[in-house]
Image (cartoon, rainbow, N blue to C red; front, side, top):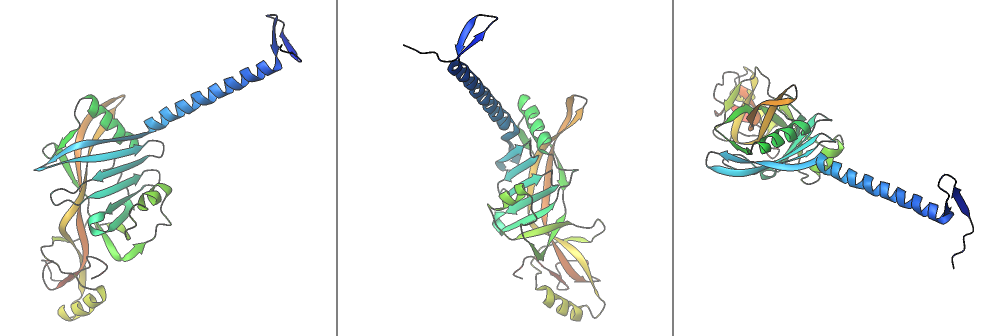
Length: 283
């Protein structure tokens, strides 16, 4: 036999509920709401974080470039495997912080610089372009249909950064590598830039002394040398006209390895004995 000690009456319906029944109903209602919210959150979170990629055809090379976007944090991660003379690279772009970090396992380096908004696609743009391409059945990028963008950046190997100043997303990403971290700087637009065909490295202090003798007291100049090897990313970028995506094109963003060099003022060939380039910290 069930004993009802407390009763509440709904006078409009003449129904009688025990307090325990009311509490149970309210509790189940709250649990249901919590479960619905959790389900919605998981769906939204899954949508906010996407992993996708493109099949790349570059000459004889065939590879898959993987991309991960976080729409909430506006972060893009890109992995490009080694191919041809291009090094494997892992890159993260934090558009809220305005910085990007690229790590190159083959040379044990990570490089930090500001994002170039003219060539980069944020999380929303990257995701939107892929979805648009996927809907058209076009997720392949080839060399023939790509516009090449060359980024000219160099690093000073005497300046090693710590990771204290990195934002949370970049700092977490960097923990997977922990290579020496360098700051990339843009090569001045009016700089002298030459191709390097052989090693011309030396310690900076020794370079100053040697060049002071070799240059016959005529002084030195700073030039930049492009070496073999590079890193690159390939993206589909779309322009928006009102509510429609138009002019979706393929971009091949390449970054050659560039070194800062000291040369005698008369030098026009960076491979001569009158130049010294700092190519790593051990030189």
